[in-house]
Image (tube, rainbow, N blue to C red):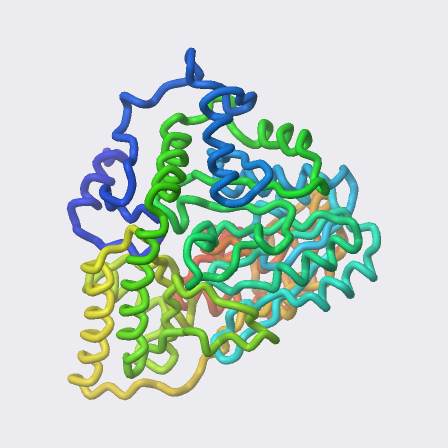
Amino acid sequence: METLYKKLEAYHARDIYPFHMPGHKRNEGAVDLLPGLTRDITEIEGFDDLHHPTGILRGAQDTAARLYGADETFYSVNGSTGALLAAVCACTTHGGSVLIARNCHRCVYHAISLMQLDSHYLYPRITVPYGLNGSIQPEQVERALSVHPDVQAVVITSPTYDGVVSPIKEIATIVHRHKLPLIVDEAHGAHFPFHSYFPVSALGQGADLVIHSLHKTLPALTQTALLHVRGDLADREQIRRYMAMFQTSSPSYLLMGSIDACIQKLSRSGSGLFGEYVDRLKRSRTRLSKLRFVRLVGESLIDRETVWDLDLSKLILDVEGSCMDGPQVYQCLLKKYNIQMEMETLTYVLGMTSIADTEEGFERLCWALEDLEGSWVRRGQIPSKERMASSQDLSVLSGEKVLPIGRAMEQDRTRRPILQSEGCVSGAFLYLYPPGIPLAAPGEKITSRLIEAITRFQDTGLTVQGLTGTSGPEIWILCHGNS
């Protein structure tokens, strides 16, 4: 029987270059990672307790807070998921109300379910022509808070999985006018504070709670994250309470050691490391921008009306002017060139970069795409200019909310073929993974456009999670209130 360890060993031997998470990129020289089992301990004498830190762990968290400019920082060994769950639960009361960006990660919806919250949505504007989820605009927040004065907290994702940033400073001003805390899922922006080439972090723009996944864009082990707090709009004791709930009582010292090693490395050498990385990144972006058929999405996307700002560490490769769709380019890069990208959609492929990326790694990606384009020319293939209907416009796909998420998840449910589910009330989450943004949530009516989108995603090999069935795709629906 194949074991995880042997599979990892075999994968390592294949020399696949990772333009994907985690941020250490399997580059052992990127940070002083702990070597293994000899450091795998529990809360023994002298090593403190994460849930009641008074010694070495308290000092480590304080160092992280100083580095990021927070009033207080909490380690999370349950990733950004645990930190977001704790943040939402700490800032709301059972049966309360919350305003969230519809493109929030699924764990925010899980917090809504746990707290039986009534959720109201901010829909990101869709970019043209790429179909990316754009920024949340301040006027949207203002209108929503006027319509829903019972809201207890506001949650947005900035940057998005694709690197789209919202105007946090303006949004924070509005949210604070209503005396509410602003929670920002900045999981993909842990690198923002370390170079001016990247957008300004939400911590420097007035957000009250900010969550960073260290492992996504920095050299740290998977499952490591930070929850930062500023100001007094969030109850610190409630945060501690929920952080203890959503993390193991036996936190891994390997993970905590990885957080500490990453923070120490950035504190000592961050300026130099990021200077060299940005130079490599800029050169590679310049080279990729010269491709004939694959288009590198860049600063031209920023228009302030749809995309407020963009994280250029993300390599968004638009392939609609090429001979292949996103899944085909993704698979070709993996199988022919041994390059594993982070994600693909129908129309673009996403690569993630970090300070651990090498010159050789960037060269491999640039050369692979140049060679791929060259193969099309040599075979006389004419790239298609027709653009696909690729937009994941959540405001169009999601249907009317019939029940709050928490109540819907408590109802009796049954399965129905997805093609026969129009007008039914969903009893489950449906989402593309990655990035884990719900296309439909429990308690919402299923629309014809959602069914069409799911069918299109599946036909092109994209993964839609939440479906069930063996003979054909089915969805959980509520037994009552369906057509």
